[in-house]
Structures are given as C-alpha cells and as structure tokens.
Length: 141
Image (cartoon, rainbow, N blue to C red):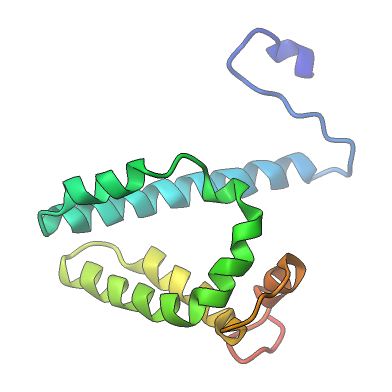
C-alpha cells in the first residue's frame, strides 16, 4: 500500500502491529494537530481583542519546534501544572468574558489538575502519563 503513495505528498507509515494501530496513530496525531491549531486560533483571538496580537506572534515566532515532539518536556509541564492549571482557568474565564470558546482552556486545566501533585518534583515520563489515567483525587478513571 505504501508504494501507492510514492512520489506524492502523502507520507505512508508502515506499522507492523495489530489491527487498529493505523487508526490510533491517525487519531492521536490529528487530535493534537487540530486541538493545538484551534487553541492557537482562540488564543490569537483573545490577544487580538486586547490589542496584543503582534506581541503574541513575536513570542510564538521564537519557538521553532513542536511541543508534541518534545516528550521530555511533558514532566516539566507536569511539575509546573500546580500553577499553570489555575492560569488556564483564568484564561478560560477571560475567553468566556470575550465571548470566545473556553472548553479547550478548561480541558487543559483539567489535565493540569491531574498533575498538580507533581509540584517541586522531577517525575519521569511514565509516571506523568500514568497520572493522566486518574481523576484529580488520584482514583483510576
């Protein structure tokens, strides 16, 4: 099948695992891509509403890599989530006041609330990912 796409813009990935892996890969990547683009658009709208869109773009243009590829950064995010979670709730409130969708910011806050116990620690990636499968009280979901 991959040969069908040779010479095209489509990048075929050969997976040797079980049925369903291709769908899981597609959904994993597209959920990140779509959610991050939607979140970026909402963040830009909020900045625009307050006249700081040029400053936001200046900050963003200083980043050259994708957060998705920086898995070593996930534990650092988890360790800071005790303060970033409340900031995301504040962002959600600001978005609501501006008449913009706040669900993505609230969802990010919910993720960070699961990691709040990592304050002042250096958790490993496995533990950080495991914590995503628990509720804010540490109970399995």
